Image 1 (cartoon, rainbow, N blue to C red):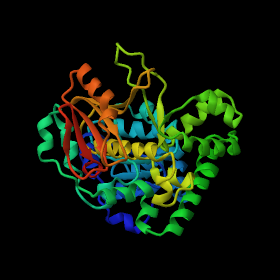
Image 2 (cartoon, one colour; image 1 turned 180 degrees about the vertical axis):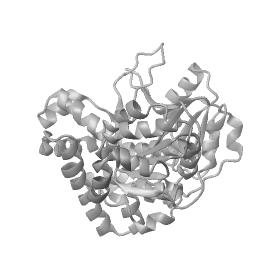
Image 3 (cartoon, rainbow, N blue to C red; image 1 turned 45 degrees about the vertical axis):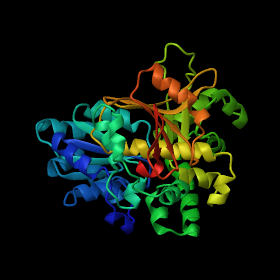
Length: 415
């Protein structure tokens, strides 16, 4: 990602990465292609040497004698697209271990490889901090600080928190990001024709280069059909055997395809919340396409009118809000948190359940402005059964308000 417009954009993760470099010898930025990993790495450590493992000249110099190369550059080195040559990790490890106490030595970026993480964790266990970078979050695009909303998770959840919370963006501002997605280049260009061409190119490059290189035996035609059908299922529970029948491939192949799309950071898997002992829970995971701009492009939705007429609207908004929250939490120093969804066999459902050191927060996501109180029954019941501080509804309203003693409404502009 070398868009000049990107260089001026402050990313939420900048501070966190700088902090992690003070504590670890190696930090790795993971994310889908074209989300701005290179730009971010250069912003965090602008004076470090930069090498790109997709540049043949850089590769030749390093691979000719990796041990000698790391002796020449034992610190302050950015290695871009590090997943391309996993064999380098063993050399990197011995280089790090020669001066085990020294921090802030290497900053890696990586994308498009389900195996990349296992290579890192095997070779650099205990020596590396890993950070996920998604497409632009709304506050990054509008160049506002990370919302106060995320301070809610810094300590035990408290209902008093909402007295001062105000939306940071308007509903209209959030709608733009929801429709267009957060890939920096097409978003910053603000040109419908360019966006279309960029997305065409992104899809083709992804399938014909990344996927073909990682899985040379893959049937690209079947995988393309899988992607197309998967979009229509974004935000739902995926039935692998139904999906396999639709594409005429085995359930095992569908499992492999799902591993590919989540391993290349295009698809987010939400596991089922199974801590409820009373109710009969559906245990299959739910999933959605991480970027709503890519989702809408693949579904041929170009305008708001088309989005509002499409049955995917509810799931699309749900995926957008879930990703905004996940990206916000990833930018904080809160650790050991999980995201799940909840659904019983009777059809009672909650879109998102966050659990972590702060406690547990069930969240309903509605693309409307005024919630139907009847639709909050499951949420209220869940709050009472689990003795929680409160539950939350995120929608397109303009103000924070308590809808019932158990449920607070938070406008999407707050997150």
